[in-house]
Every structure is written in C-alpha cells, then in structure tokens.
Amino acid sequence: MSTDEWKIREEAPGDAGQVFEVEAAAFETPAEAQLVDALRQQVKPTLSLVAEAGDEIIGHVFFSPLAIEGDVAPSVGGLAPIAVRPDLQGRGVGGALVRAGLERAPRLGWKAVFLLGDPAYYSRFGFELAAPRGFHYVSEQFDAGFQVILLEEAALDGCSGFVRYPAAFDAL
Ligand SMILES: CC(C)(COP(=O)(O)OP(=O)(O)OC[C@H]1O[C@@H](n2cnc3c(N)ncnc32)[C@H](O)[C@@H]1OP(=O)(O)O)[C@@H](O)C(=O)NCCC(=O)NCCS
Image 1 (cartoon, rainbow, N blue to C red):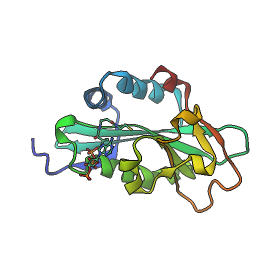
Image 2: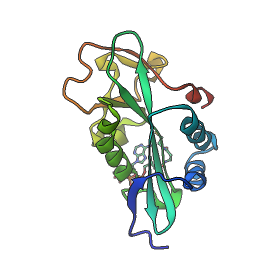
Image 3: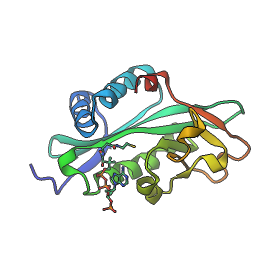
Image 4: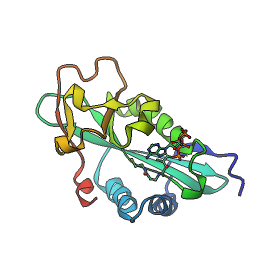
C-alpha cells in the first residue's frame, strides 16, 4: 500500500469495521472503538471523518454534540476520539483530520469545539485551555487538558459551566 497518498473524507456506510480496527489499534484497549460504535447509534448530529490510503482506512476522528450545563448556551461539539494507525503516525494524518473536522463543524451548527487532550498537540490547531473561560469537564481535576476552540468570535461570551458529554462516554 502506498501511504504517501491519502485523503480525508466523511465516513461512509460500510466503514465501521475498519474504523473500529484503527481506533482499537491506536489505543491501549478497545474502549474508544466501542465508544464510536455507541455514539453512532445514540447521538445526533455527529461528524465522523476518515483518512483513507488506497482502500484502507488509516485514521479516524469523531465529533459529538455536547451540552453546557446551566446557562443558555450555544450548540457546541466535542472532538473524541481521534486515532491514526500506529505505524503511520507522525505524517500529518492526525492534523489533517482535526483541521478537516473543524472546517466542517460549523455546518452542524456548532459555535465551538471542546476536547480533552494534550495541549502540546492541540494548541497548534488553535485550541486553548477552557478553564480560564469558565468551562470544565466532569471536575476541575481535568482542567490541564480540557481545551476549546471558538469557531465564531465571541461564541461563548456570557456562558460558562461544566460541559456534559453524551452518556456513552461514561463507559471510558
Ligand atoms: C494523537 C494522534 C491522533 C496524532 O496523529 P498523527 O497523525 O500522529 O499526528 P500528526 O502527524 O498530525 O502530528 C504529529 C505531531 O504530533 C505530536 N503528538 C502526537 N501525539 C501527541 C500527544 N499526545 N502529545 C503531544 N504531541 C503529540 C507528535 O510528536 C508530532 O509532533 P511534531 O509535529 O512536532 O513532530 C495519534 O498519535 C494517535 O492516534 N495516538 C494514539 C491515540 C491517541 O492518543 N489519541 C488522542 C487522544 S486525545
């Protein structure tokens, strides 16, 4: 397989098996792969993108709707999980998946996207820590990795609080 040429596209019917394999290979357990299967069934709208080399899926990213607790808040999305086949990491595939997702996210009505991850990686796409803006994941204990990117200027002005993920994330 030539891995020099790959493209990003939306997940199509029939991709779920290969997506499961990529997610399961990239993480230590199949929990993230199972999460994607559950989210596909349980939440809407979602955004699922794959990176494809030839007819093989080599990377995947999933976005779900999140809810900001408390205030009247705009629609926002969450990026999770993201995975690139271990032997093909470090070639820009993950970055291309993140950027393609952020480009499409406004079409789902989302004004911002949150994620839990390493700021050393995600800051390059424009993500910043969410806690200084008053947003938290489950508890303040996660503040160092909980990040947000605004897709519209001032999108989150006047709102703050805990950000709730779909119930399927409880299984992680
Ligand atoms: C995270 C992941 C999707 C990135 O995909 P990728 O195709 O390797 O990413 P890219 O090629 O676009 O970027 C590679 C860069 O990201 C860095 N990077 C990757 N994961 C990182 C992490 N967790 N923390 C900090 N930097 C990270 C690499 O060191 C590399 O840095 P460089 O550009 O300075 O050399 C991939 O490494 C992966 O599947 N990891 C296992 C699953 C995982 O941890 N998912 C994220 C959970 S939040």
